[in-house]
Image (tube, rainbow, N blue to C red; front, side, top):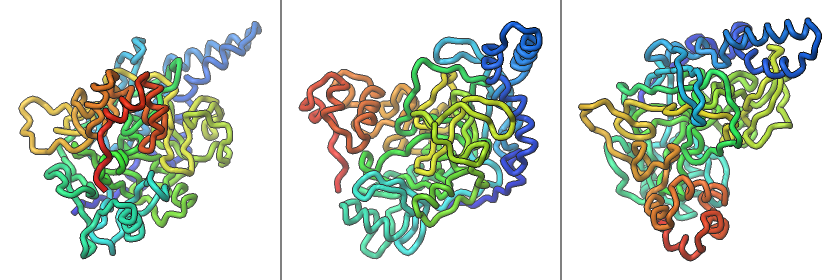
Length: 440
């Protein structure tokens, strides 16, 4: 049974409830992004020159990422600003955060329902009748009609803890137990550096970290790829195979998605604020809810769900991401450059796992999970479904290239002709190399 914690608004320092304090911090923190605008418009007059100098000075003494905004409940040690190297080779400064497996007093779950009469978390189904659903009898019986049977004749749901056992059935609801010893270290550039081209988010790609101190990842693995369902709770989070909790959505605005998608659910572990700052992406760009400073949903978002505009009522115009009212309500790509080695955990398994030497290994390596460099992890940390590593080898391409081509061509229902063309192989070669779909 999943342990329960309670996270109150007062325990988050400071989230959107204390907007005045946060916005004062952001006014100074985000002025760094306004500097290039001020410099380019300065002209020749002395007042403009003075303004430019002032902005440059502010930029030199301020970071966009404000480490004071992160929840004290989540921190395993005091955050700090450190020297780091970006993926493009540039030297930079990064916010270094070391967080716990789960913020103190945070409530998580429910995940998998025990029986058909129970209500669990949520799932974004990508098969027939695609959409966001509550994990309940209606959803699970709908899946059974499509050949994905997650329960016995008596209505008992197949629930498996991948930390201790492996599924013995074709289709199981995955609910992982926590590891209280895990620590997670992240590096976020304090000031964004825009990349030459955006980096798309695939399956379980690293997105960023919430102010609550919870890591953020993109889409969870598809049931159609793995055969199993790693249940999310109603805040769009679940426990990684390594034992630490993370989000798969902009959880501070997830209730807006439920309202739009007509899903009977509410987030219980994070206060909701569609205009609030949710966290920072791994490129240093802030992630906000679905509405802008005027409490209006922006209509000029780019392919990454970002735009340049006013940050709340700070008076500062800067590039930032917004959530949407459709799940997953996260940035679809990252515009900026991320830091090298920007995510690691002391966990025994799962994403970013780097257990200390001498660790007594007690947890399983789950389907689709694993340590960086393992066969089921691509070079960029994206989770690779079982069999895809071997397929990439047969095709003479990298796992990252194969996964990206599949995602670009439709994900689980990818147009194989498009995938083959992108990889410069024949469709016949692709079909032979790819693993069979899970049993139905």
